Length: 174
Image (tube, rainbow, N blue to C red; front, side, top):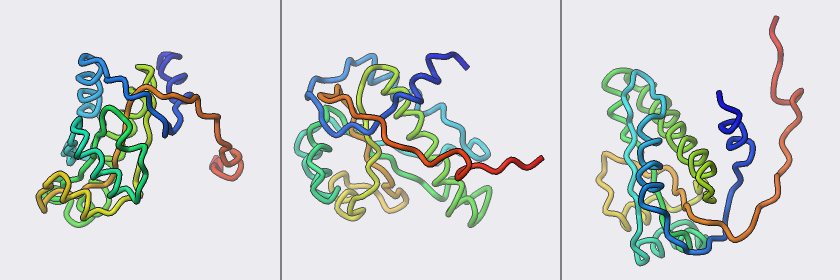
């Protein structure tokens, strides 16, 4: 793995302050592409992303996100949805309730790391009213919104937060 990729992983932070400067079109296209290349169980790819540029809809999403106004400040908000039945057709209930969520989470992580690598700030927002987010985007019933990811140039450089120590996270099994 190139050192730059590791640097992007280590430098990624949650950004909640955006300049409002739009993303470069090529960067936006690249971000959409990296989502598609995330790993998924059985290559089912049970994700669907709304790419929201509309200010009115971004405000509705911020309201759905329990009033987290920074969601509306970002020039673009990705709304990650899962289509559980795409996994269930191959893996049954475990695909529906576990693999599909893992898969969309991997796609979101690709998005976050790529945004960092391109010099943008981003934040994984999971605290939101699902019904209000669904209504804002007219999301059909077979899709479930699971995350909002506002992306844009950040106005602050967030400090690194602590992480649990290695001995509390790992156990070596010889």
